[in-house]
Length: 260
Image 1: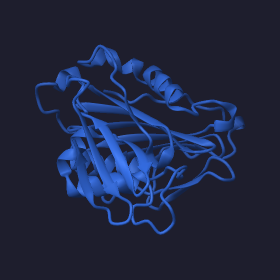
Image 2 (image 1 turned 30 degrees about the horizontal axis):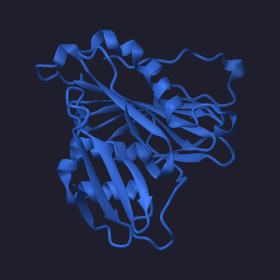
Image 3 (image 1 turned 90 degrees about the vertical axis):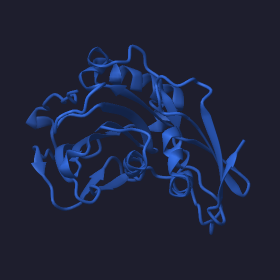
């Protein structure tokens, strides 16, 4: 599946525009005075900054070692106070519109959206299966699955992403989602001094302790006193809707237990 490219912006409208180029050093991105982000790819990955207009938009592409995965990250200035993409329903609706162009190439005919709330921010993702590679291994430079996602990463910024992989619901896939969620500025956290300070750390602790829980990514998290409760549905568009898992992660110790 081809990633959507963005239209060129006239040079007169650009304060700072970087053409497609490989970047060796971390990139600092500013979406507002408060929302600044440091973009450094996972170990062994290659980063290209395709577009950057401070306080408006930044587009970057990351390709994993041996082309294990590829992701396109689009940072958008978006004020939550203006009521745009400021709750889960609006994000999910925008995500469906964003992913619609890929449906003709995919096995799926309908979207199944999986909600999340990393660090208390609204988020959602869906995945699609490339029809050409549903039953066979793709060649290098092609991938079986396309994950489309959106997450509010700050009061003034939203991140949309396209992630191409050959597997989903695995610990390796979990690490890629962890990288994406690392840009989120927390809106909810445990009391100061807690070992598991926010829901992202709770999910990381869960995957370390129970790798098979990655099949139920992403999780929605609720802070209940001294523990995080994580609720997820199987990341499988063909699975029953009631195929869910529920876990508890202690904020003080990181101890994980499954709720029945």
